[in-house]
Image 1: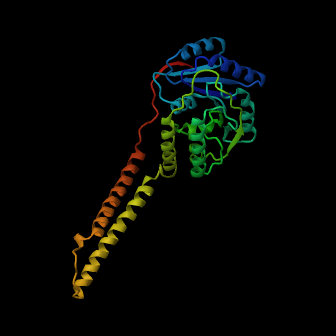
Image 2: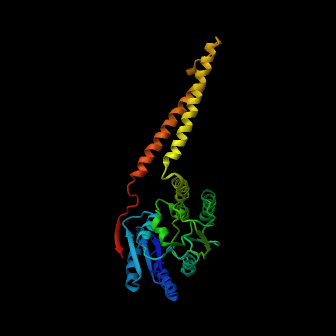
Image 3: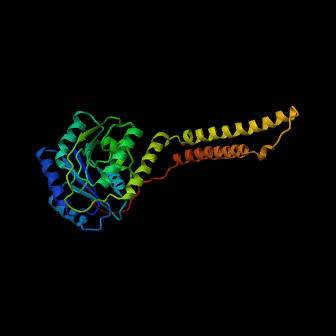
Length: 317
């Protein structure tokens, strides 16, 4: 199969028929073998009923419905697991992404041998409350990851099948999939300017919580990417430095006192009366705790349970 189009959705019943018809039209014009895979993230409107009707018209439609809302990352992770195409295209269900971009995305993955092509919505129709946080996240992510993309969070992306079968997406980390892929060893990441259309149906799902969660997930990805398989290198290094610093300060205080005693020099304060002694003591304790944290984290990484388990209510596969 050439292409799997993975579409996560939440309460998008109005746009689904038009989107599906548009995707099918593009696929038929270019003679692609394909599937359209809808992941209903616990919609409370009639989205699932619409999908069931679409299945009667288009045999290339497949779908999974979550029992409750888990978020876009969960929907993508499940969609990636069942996608069968050589190239996997992701897009939003709100008609702000254009299916006309699919042929060029497919070509660049197949002919130019990219691992990922990320869309760049150079001209946007989003409100300023969404565009400003997006610009900040993009700048921070470029700096921390070294990946020179202008729009990490664009829903329209193309992937080689190997990429989506290797990476794991959870939390709010869908916006940082290129970073996750890079840490997994997929480094040929490109960008393509794509059309961004004004929202035709429904309302945006963007909220303040995504701004906060996105920043925390960026820090999480940075840490897990560098130290996820070797947490002792991070916690152990900090622990050893803190322990050695505290030990040095304590030994220095004791040495100064012994020197004064040996030289019969009056010593004004006991070691335990000096603030530096308590700073040294705290440094030793913190260092020991960080070292033990690294040791425990090493044990956890060797016995981590499955993280992505979601309750699925219905399937059309």
